[in-house]
Image 1 (cartoon, rainbow, N blue to C red):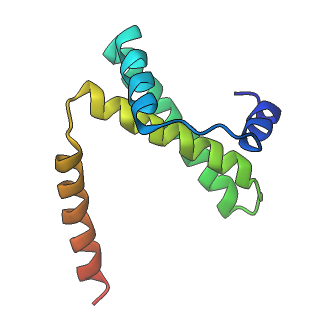
Image 2: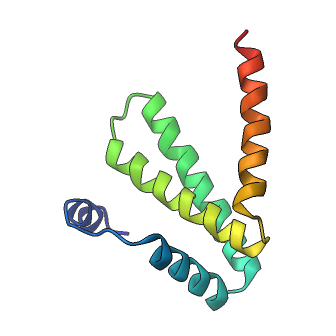
Length: 106
């Protein structure tokens, strides 16, 4: 997305319902092959990696980071849909990983 358009839209009153978000995700996954969606997800995760790297190196590009984080979250939703990952399964997996993180903090 064009950066200026992204910034302009961030200032707007766009707010989708959960139902509308799910519908958009479902239609998007149905409109392209699952392999293409997975490839796009990998590319978006790589772009997030670059944005994080730039932040570490002192390029203060919060908007760029925010945009790439949003793309990555959307791609995670695509992957959940493609591979039939339930919210409960994902939450349990996250709890397992967070428990491990908590144990490291002790």
